[in-house]
Image 1 (tube, helix red, strand yellow):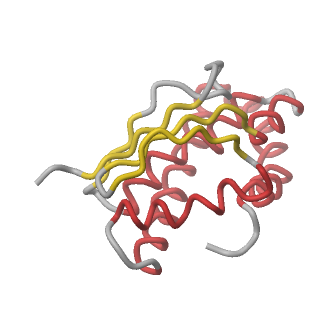
Image 2: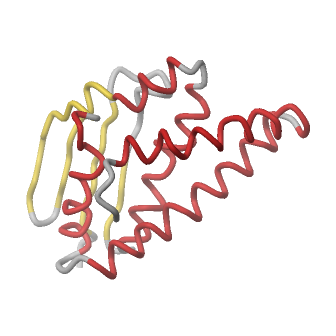
Length: 154
């Protein structure tokens, strides 16, 4: 991944995608527009994960850990670490500038699709031997984001 903090990358993406999404939503309806955006985010996220998997050495969980600084750069996230072992990375995000940005635009659902929904396909792209469990995100109204990545048991 490039050196640009991911928050800045998301803001650049949103400059063109949000007006486009609004037009598509008006033309074909919210449900279909959201489905198309989700499909695009899934494709992008998995491809990004595959790029990380190819360019970073180590286990899938180590590759994921190597990617986190790009997402947290510029104080983008306030992280509460819970577990960091060879088999698990668990953390809570207590503050999120991604969420603040999209809420200020009046588009938290769009922001959740663009930023939060990238996490599962990104994880899968890095390696099918790790799983992500998350029950809530700030952008979707949760008090925090609860990330629980685990390496598959042999």
